[in-house]
Length: 222
Image 1: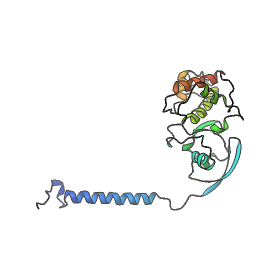
Image 2: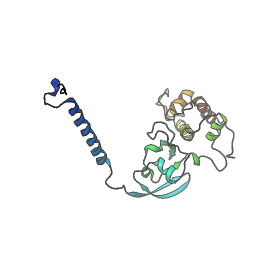
Image 3: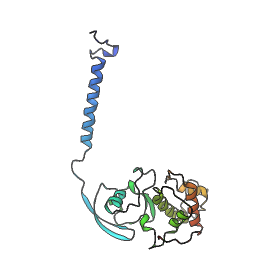
Image 4: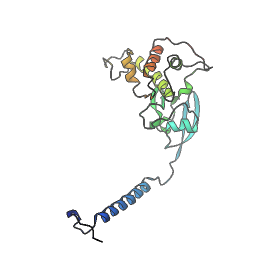
């Protein structure tokens, strides 16, 4: 059989086939070593934390690696908070911490020690829905509903932010500390961190505007 031709780059006497074989083998070995190096040598310790969630105090031992989202869903079975992208990009996991909206997938549960957390399950007052929940029903602010808990929690926080004068990227005068006028552009900008794959955005804006203007009737869970 005729031997493989050597290119100028093969002056070392190593054929192309041999070269690529060594390269692939080295890459596989390096990957295996990388995985082993990244693997934890010991399990993380659990620490004592106190979280008040939807008005109920929870004294917990929490693994320091657990996100708030996983604690809510897997440990406390509050599955209204949804896991979407798990990278802080879709907003499906939005909850309120001390009145501020956050992506619960992007924070560790232990970081919320001593704080007040409200999920979608905690917005209703007894059998009466929160006005924002009622508005989403009245204005068809959802289709599949997967993103809806995060949308509603985000919208509740949005109204409080506007009342306090917190500006957005489209606020005409960011120096003003008075109540922000919630135009459609303001609402869309402030809700831009919550993605709806069904495209219910116009109805979501309408629902938020209805709550802001006090045009929502009381609705019961039943």
